[in-house]
Image 1 (cartoon, one colour):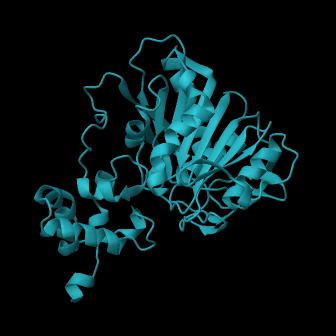
Image 2 (cartoon, rainbow, N blue to C red; image 1 turned 90 degrees about the horizontal axis):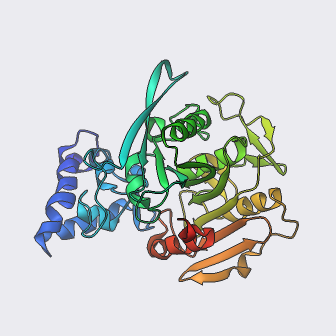
Length: 374
């Protein structure tokens, strides 16, 4: 029993169990391996939100987490668990060197963790259609995620955008307490300048930001800290809210020293953006109603949206929780007119949002008017 419960990083049992679940199980129909795979998923899903985070998976199989997390959002659904890293039938092909629309580039930076310099990667998917002007959308993975799967996740949804997926140092973004202490805002500024110089079709007046979880925290950082050199028009923040360090006393804040958690400098965000926040009311990783999360103490999801609404010109009261407008199955919308800010509540959605994920993308495309892009 001690051998089976050790859960060490070198455990043969867990590695074998993970391989059985992910590789053997799907090919055996309703056999024993499939049952075992479902059982492992249920037992590892500690908070019962229908997805596995990196922290929930035991140390041995955790080494294979990135391969199983095929869309790179930092979470493994049961479908991904069953597929074992294989793409579902009918899904878009993974980017590779044969795809001439996929390109990899390097930005060199140095900071306290990498004093001698470090090559940071970002990936670009250029539209297949020959267009003269393309919106630019930058994608930010969750903690433990990767850049390239984010391209796959949005490839079909935004076919006419130049998709740019940035890679976080140590697979994380430096918001407060993450492994990375990298100068990430400067990293994104350097990426934007590089993209604009490489791609004449890139429209520097039409930039969008999309992030999930820790990546959403990075989106909030950029909304607060980016100047008006680049015109960020749209921002989508999934399953995370601002921390009380980033917003308190009705002010936005940033850090003078990014190696600390001390947000000590007041900031007035530049410009007015179309901001949509999406969060599940059953999220136990970043609590919907506020509280302790991976980056410290978080505001509630609705307080976060209201803070942005008031910063962007809304002068009314905050929308009561009970007055959300239905906009899909288990979806409630809280809109702040004239401010450009909308919050979408996913009823009972966890950190992976659950079955409401499917209808969300077309709703977001409609709200942002992206379907009208050339």
